[in-house]
Length: 288
Image 1: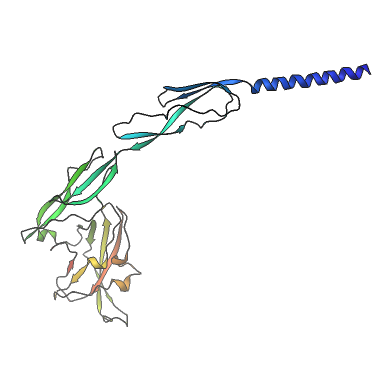
Image 2 (image 1 turned 90 degrees about the vertical axis):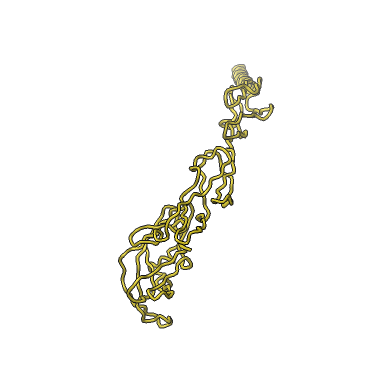
């Protein structure tokens, strides 16, 4: 019987010791320090108990703005977690860039486009190509960029359209040489082929058709395309010719090629009725 009592006492004593050590760990306390982004101490919380989640009780942290941005408090680095030892938390911020109004004006001061841009971005004009009328029937003004030169946004600014005056003869498109129409660079090939329209439902059925290759490149800052509404074709007889692009819309008709992203290009073709030998005119509305 004595032997049994001794064993029981030893076991009971071991259990008590184990419980006391566990309680001591749980009652341990730590120091939590809260700092701003630059290391400035915002708050120190002492005697924070093990296993609890610390909380910041001071004023919302702030950060001085820079020349081109403001800062908004976001959270604490690495996220606030339960206490297991001493810890330091730093304030994180969202940077909010200032915005400035940028205007694009025509030669006469008329605002063509106005919107806000974030600081340090490069603004661009996304409207239609600016125009300027000419009082001389022999010349036309051609858009020639903006003044001053476009730079990073750092303040509100107005850019004004610039033009150069050219003779209308200079503006007539030449074969195999690019020219600009509505932010599209067009290059008509000097080569061409003849086809025969075979469509019993067309009034032009059986007529000879001219196929003229053309390269179209988007040199603007937004998506663009060439449509049948942009084009009027005249033959040597000075009569307007039927544009037959719809009969080749599923092949390579330029008017059905779709939108081009800035900088993109495609090689397509135009289709129109053959009006005999002589000079043909393709009017894109460049010369008024």
